[in-house]
Amino acid sequence: MDAGCQRFRALGQAGCGTGRDGRSPLSRRLTLIGLALAGIAAVAWLAVYRDPPKSDPAPPVAAITGEAEAIDGDSLRVSGIEIRLEGADAFEYDQRCGAFACGTAASANLHRLIDGNTVRCQPEGEDRYGRTLARCFVGDTDIAAAQVRAGLAVAYRRYSDRYVREEEAAKAVKCGAWAYSFQAPEDYRHSKT
Image 1 (cartoon, one colour):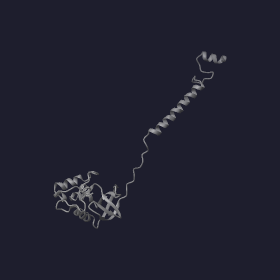
Image 2 (tube, one colour):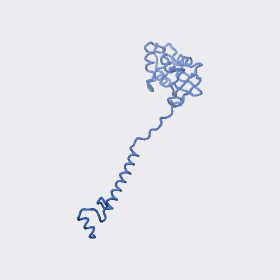
Image 3 (cartoon, rainbow, N blue to C red):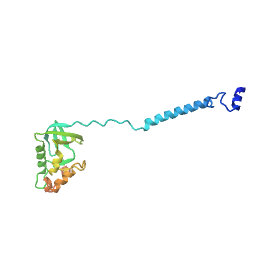
Image 4 (cartoon, helix red, strand yellow):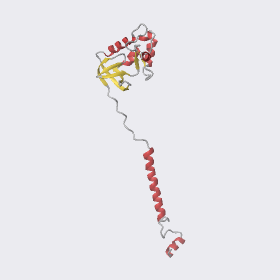
């Protein structure tokens, strides 16, 4: 070590291979490397743990609108698309509820509700048979709700509780099939297989 360096060190001042902060070049390099690694780690953490970007919600499925034909008490065809009314289960066409031909009445009532009217259905999915599940309306009238209120369908509780109030109201006044004893439509279908 030269005499100048010894003099600076004796006075407690930086010099002789150290920077103004008194640290050696190696110490400064290690500090910079540490800061760079900390920055890289922070960026990596943000990439993994930050909330994903907000994506736009899925666009609503277009309504199916047009003239309709009744297939049975809870199925119809609108613009060539077979639709099953979501949340209601109507009596089967050949089903009887005591002395009442509840299945025929359910189908006839659906015909009456949609006859000559424009029907608007909002798809909500697809059933295991490939039919579109939808909530359908004639004007402001919910077709499935009308069938349940008339006692010609029951709330399909296995899939939805949407029409439970309508069912309870029909039952309370013994409307439609509620005036008789009956087997639930789903049970009736299973008993035939």
